[in-house]
Image (cartoon, rainbow, N blue to C red):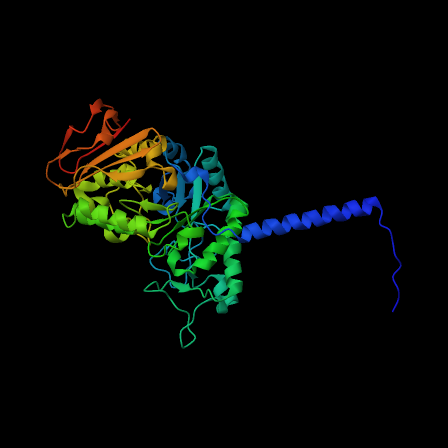
Length: 460
């Protein structure tokens, strides 16, 4: 064995060694802290945001990204914050439904549907939205792909198979086939595709289709990797799995409340049922997380009916409810124009923009949310406290308060006139009606008379 000679290190070499050692320790600390991230870290811009769902195919006669982009100034004027774009990817042709197919049968996760335009058109849209102070999230389909997605031919092992070795379609969605999340390479490829649109187009997050059908640990890892590029906002199409909201997702769907709205509009339920829902909500989900509340979206409109069909004269008061309870309000494409038809899902069916009958109404709701801390989202907003003694099952009344800001909401959730008395010291003060600008003094002796399906929202 050869003996090593003793050597003295120069000061320069010693200094270099110390620097390298410190850098290694620093990187190790960063990696350790990253791995210890076990809860949701939300972006600040979501705290008082609303969301608008964009159906590119039906938005304009052209049905293109460029044509939709012309609407951005109008949506900004209406106070829209987050633009959720339904899938913009190429649609599968094999086993396609209808002539145009489903947006959710993705043929290529890294390209734009040529019917909508190209990736440069999409980048231009995101850039202008950002310049106007809006944010863009893409609709992502991680549970399944189109049959003719190249992944299916190049990597059939990435998909589920039945006992005969055939691809599996979820439910009756015969135009798509389900991924196998036991395959780690498939997982990595899906994360890579999610990162692609953040890196290439600077998008701000995703709405994730049937998120609960994909393993939670996949989403947790994907969120970590996306956040390492830029902080993102994540919306889960799910209501059943609270664990999705602990680390991966900021917001999920408030389907239960939506169904309650439909039932109340048909006199099948009443205001007390909403309080039961809110108690369930508070005991089920992490406090930081948000619910998304709505009177319509692409599924409801196409498959279950227009807002008018489902809610009738209760449409407006239900929208006020969706915007003022703890959560984030959604507007679906065309609601500001009083969309009164079921948009065909697999065919071209352009929205009529001739009469913007609800634009000012939604602008008021958007500004109400933005300007009043009491209505902000999650822990940034105020707790909702019930007003009245609960004896009137047709009136839903509450106050939300944050710092010095108070918002009082009184909703007649019936087709009959109702009167409501407060009997609560907490409501005393000077208030302003956000819809008509009327100013008045309110105290515990005040009685409010409401016409059928009417509402009052006041702030101090």
